[in-house]
Length: 240
Image 1: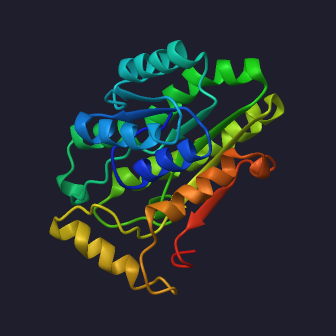
Image 2 (image 1 turned 90 degrees about the horizontal axis):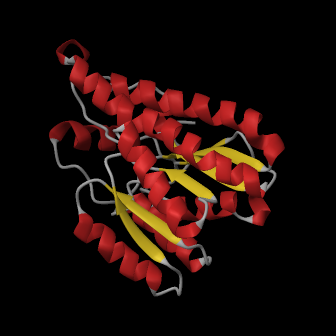
């Protein structure tokens, strides 16, 4: 199950896992058409691809999403917490609603979805949880306090779950993408942030969603079975 899977990195993750033979649950919050398009692409690999729309910023919606996936497939073997909000706003202008909304999507969703999916993983003695963090989990950025806090929290959650559930055969890791060529936000703050981070990438280019998805595939494969509690940076050598 991949959240935020209608485009960009989420879409690439769905298609890569489908190509590897995984049935996939494709989650989005608003753009059903985009999710259905991804589902059709994934189904071409011969797997079962299901669209499950839900606002993961709502704990009830998280639990409903997990129930739908479990009812369909019996368990969620691989949980990918990719959905995120990345608004830019000066700290002194931030309202409580701004703070709560970002934390609910970028951090709380990973908590509640993991809690809902872990019992099935424990029963099987096998599972994979992958949380997406990003450079906000390593560096603080002006104007993005809630995002930085949420992503630091997702990194802490990753380490805690790795220790608690590793003995059950379940690995938990994080992927931290750098600047990725994707459907970009077009507001001035986002573009400035993108240019600022790109200037620090030794490879001199943006990464691609497929390059991020390739790391996910390693983490959920037998070859990644001994990787646990790690944050893997996919950033071209920038912001290490």
